Image (cartoon, rainbow, N blue to C red; front, side, top):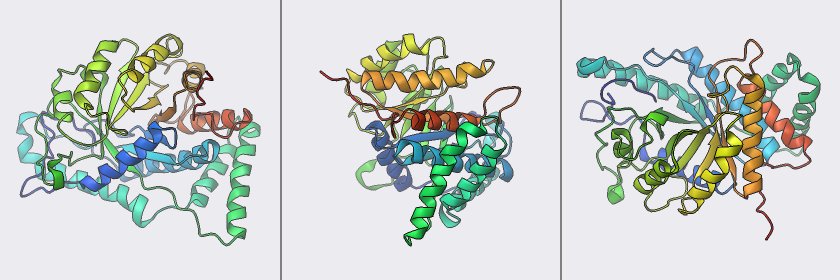
Length: 366
């Protein structure tokens, strides 16, 4: 969950228990470790709620629905489990008067997490439900002729499972991420066996690009919790800053601890990504490499798909794993591809290329 107040506004105390359980974040660590090995794929969905606004149920439901639809398409195309993570904004406490609003903030945050858990646990939508939504999307897409073979293949696979008497396939439970900002200076209490400290608000914590420096306050706070950590890396981020951050956040080199979300732009990804990947590999850190092709290509629809495609191709050449994708919160408009457009474009490129799992790299032969 994303907070913009001076402090996190949701540290647990006697009146406000933790909103997440350490076991949930620990489970996510294991799934991200699989993504780092090329055995799973992270799908991260941006929030449709502006920072500071109270999240509306329809926005959250739409976000989780897009995650579900993308999960079905990519898990079929890639041949590996998809790890869905939703970025959910929470209402802030107002500046230094925040403590007076903490009960309201905590209540809104708890209700939001309850909706996420209900969507992924109690309701547990079936794969067939998301598949029908995908079929409707494709039927109205300008790329219908290109995408229909993919949905047709998924439909055939579901029919086969049904004919064999298999149970209805359920979608994976989504996790929740939040962004660490300047006020995140107080870690949660060490209240689990082993003395580990866990962030009580989100399963995964993200460091924005402005906080990449290892000496920044958010990095220091995040270093004291055991949750998975995402780091936004842009073309201007120095290699020294990234390597210093690895040493501070992941000194034990734990698989699944770090995810690097790259935002380079279609015109820079080929120049910047290979050297950065090799520098990180030299540290023996086992990280998840994910791509956000929207941030630097918002006015260039072709650039969105070009950066994502180059990201995948470069990892295959390097013998590393393209392990994740960030989806934008907004729908496509004015010729811009939306979240599902990118999912289908990449999945179709996978199946068209004759390989069932090109996101999983093949090491270069000696």
